[in-house]
Image 1 (cartoon, rainbow, N blue to C red):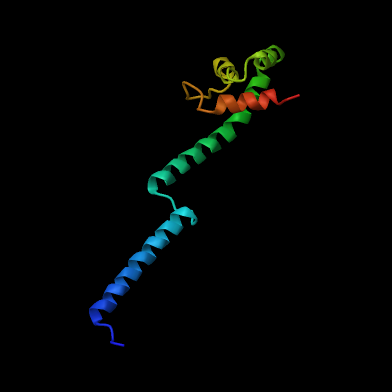
Image 2 (cartoon, rainbow, N blue to C red):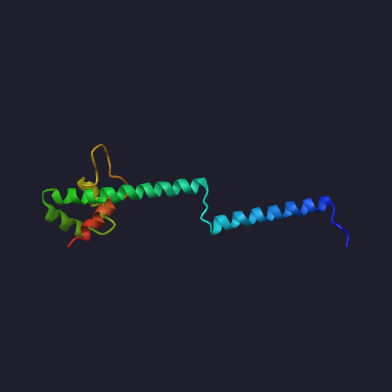
Length: 119
């Protein structure tokens, strides 16, 4: 059996490194939870939006409960179709907070969900 030349050994080493690197990338993105920078920013934005909604929705519901005519407003909210309830809340001003011209996206719907689940 003839011994391998140095060039053949280097070639096999390079091939092994390339295959190993490719395998690491595939495994990392498929099962390892790796994401690209763009995906990470998108995930961060969704997380921040969810946090804002989670904090503001109960405040909106409290504003709704403290407003005059709460019984009539609650009846009107429950009477509205589910896809119109966020508009009902937004139009009532309960989901708009000081310094805002309009409600934060998602707050009116989360507020409506909290209110309609009340007994």
